[in-house]
Image 1 (cartoon, rainbow, N blue to C red):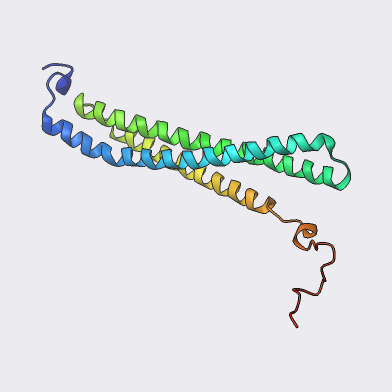
Image 2 (cartoon, rainbow, N blue to C red; image 1 turned 90 degrees about the horizontal axis):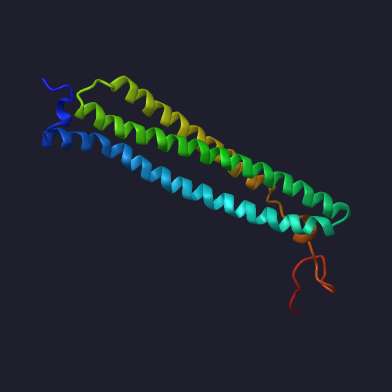
Length: 169
């Protein structure tokens, strides 16, 4: 018997079956890619905001300086959190790629890698789940920092009454 087994002359049905097994993980990769796109977009917006704040800090003083420093610290934290979400999600994608490769290798070389493949898939699910959880933390950080200051919310133009909208006679 040939030690390479099915690698020399794989049956079409075996290859077709392996492709069927690999379809679900490949769709999962597509979803992970979309999630990474969202993470990259948030990271880009946070970095852009940090660059704007960095330019304002040297010219600021007093309470405004303190507010800008507090905001840039939160932005720095958000950058770190999004980077962790991206790292864990990319790790999950790499593990899923390994699952697909090993599915083919296992079937074509007639090697039993079922347990190893299952462990890799479980690892990818843990990794993507952790990435989603960390992304949730980042969204909470982002929404917590978005506060419209009272001086803006209740700003009155010169000559306006504080009692509300003007009445018609």
